[in-house]
Amino acid sequence: MARALSQKFAQSLGQPFIVIARGGAGGTVGTATAATAAPDGYTILLGVVSPMAVNVTLYGSKLPYHPLKHFAPVSMITKVPQMLSVHPSVQAVSVNQLVDLAKAPGSKLNYGSAGSGTTGHLVGELLKKRAGISLTHIPFKGSGPALSALLSADVGVMFSGPPAVLGMSQAGRLRVLAGSGTMRTPVLPDVPTFIESGLNIDVTSWYCLVAPAATPQPIIQRLSSEFTKIVTTSEVVAAFDKEGYTLIGSTPAATGQMIRAELKRWEAVVKASGWKLQ
Image 1 (cartoon, one colour):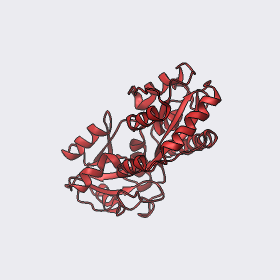
Image 2: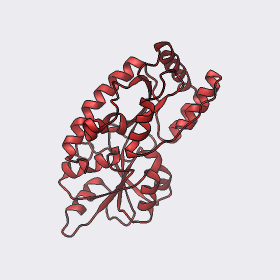
Image 3: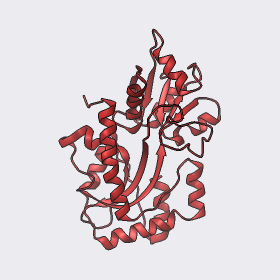
């Protein structure tokens, strides 16, 4: 996503854009690095829900930044549900059947995610709470390794965004049972939401653009304006739709309001899941 958008920014602004991928601690390392970057308009962060909302509650005072204090919002990018997928050997074709399977005597189901504290992990914990079942969490270093573990049946269940599982689902190598959020994802229209299945799980992953807090407003407004132009081009819309991403352009003020609302939403989700950092 970052690389695709950086190419469009480079074309639009006539300036080279370099993507620096800095992982670690569920996105916290890269986000903290951007928070302390010079506020001169030359550093933009692709903000993700875990480090920008979830980790505020998980880490508390240990988090080396705060999304509202250390960043200036630029624009929303997209929102995507978390999909519940299973290996074909798991005898369930719906989330309710999976719940029944998990409740059966001797059940030892486990689930993989992109890492501890990620959206997929917390949706899994929320499912355990809402459905009253036991699932063992297996964290991986990203969606790719988690998907590999699911395909090889090292884990039976996985939570991830649609792009991670779309191709393998179409190939019949895994089965997608449900998605979080209030609406079905367009790329998997036959997959019901958790809510349709009678489970109150309404959360989505999201991505946004932010810059260091003291970045001058004229620069923030220019970046937001350019992004709005980019996301309305048919070429970009078609490319992202194919991957399951519906692009959203928003004003800096609206983006800030969204982040504030999501901080409250994920605080409630983290507390409801009962999960804490060890």
